[in-house]
Length: 339
Image (spheres, rainbow, N blue to C red):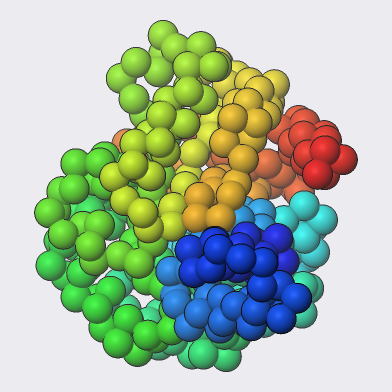
C-alpha cells in the first residue's frame, strides 16, 4: 500500500536523526526501511496518512441504491461491480456512507478490481447490523480497509448527541484496534473543537468543506470558493497533526437556473486539484462519484429543499463523465508527466 518514495522519505528522516555518517553501505537503510514499513502497518493513523499520499479517493454511493420517503431499494452486486469498474479507471480509493443496503458488497468487489484503500461508512452509529458488518468487513479485508467513518453529519442533523456518537466510536475501536476510526461533520465542528474532545476522539479527520452553504457564496467568484477550501484545510492542519481527508467539497453541475453548470464545476475541481495536491497525511476525496437525484427528496426533511443535491457527481446518473472529470484527467496526466 505504501509507495516506495514515501517509505524512503521516512527512512531518510529516521537516519538523519540517528546518525551523522553515511551508513548505507552497511545496510542500515534497508533495516530502517523494514522498521518503517512495520510501524506503518501497526499504526492505524499512519496507515491512513500513507494512503492519503498515494491513493486517489472518491466518495461513492451505488447508482441503483435509492432511499425515498424511508423506502430503501438496495444496491445489487451487478450494479456495484459496474460502478466500480467505471470508477477504477480514475480512482483507487473509495469512501462509502453505510454498510447495509447492498453497500456492504463494496469491499469484496473493490478488492477484486484492485482498489488500494477503502474507508467504510456507518450511517447509523446505533445500528448493530451496520456495526457488525463494518467489523466483519474490516477483518476480512485488512489490506484494503484503512478506516471507518462512524456517522455522517450525525451531529449537524441532530440524529444523535455527541455522547452517543463518541460511545459508538469507542465500541468500534475496541473491536477494531488496528483500524483508524473517525466521524464526519462540517469543518467548523473541527475548527471550533466543539465538543471539546471532538478531535481527540478521532484517529483521523474527515471533514466536509462546502463553500456552497456559506453566507457569502452567492457573491463569491470561482477562485474565492477554492481559496476558502484551501484556507480551511491549512487551518485544520495547523490545529492537528492527525491525517486529514476532506470527505466532501466541490460544486454541483446544476441546476442551471441556480447558476450551476458543468463548466463551473470543472473550474472548481481543476483549481482545487492544482492548489491542494494530495500528500502523505492530507488529501481531498472527490465528491462524489455519481449523480443521485433521489437525494433531493431524501435530504429535505433534515436540511430543506436543495435541488443541487441531484448534481454533485463527476459522472451523471447514467455514468456519463462530466466536464469536471474530463478536465481532471488532463490535470492528473500532466502531473504524471511532471513526476
